[in-house]
Length: 87
Image (tube, helix red, strand yellow):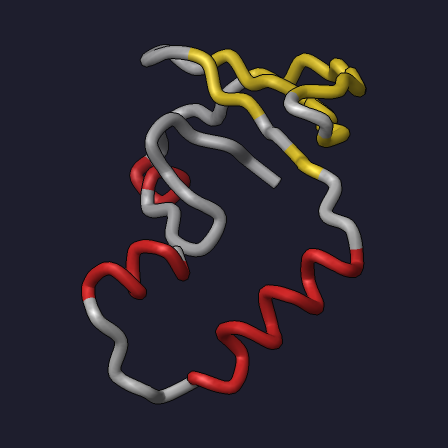
């Protein structure tokens, strides 16, 4: 997968314009921050700056609690505060 500065996984137009993708530097670094395990698989050197992948481990209990709180509200109108919390 090509990685570009200021683009996301779902929509990337730069590859279509001929701009070069970032150069991958594999790190495969694991660390603990605020009690959570994180991994940085790679960083990418782009002309505009550095792009990094961050992956955080989420425990199954946290996923269940999130779904119990928000999953049943799909399609429901949320207040701005609720929308911010959900995001």
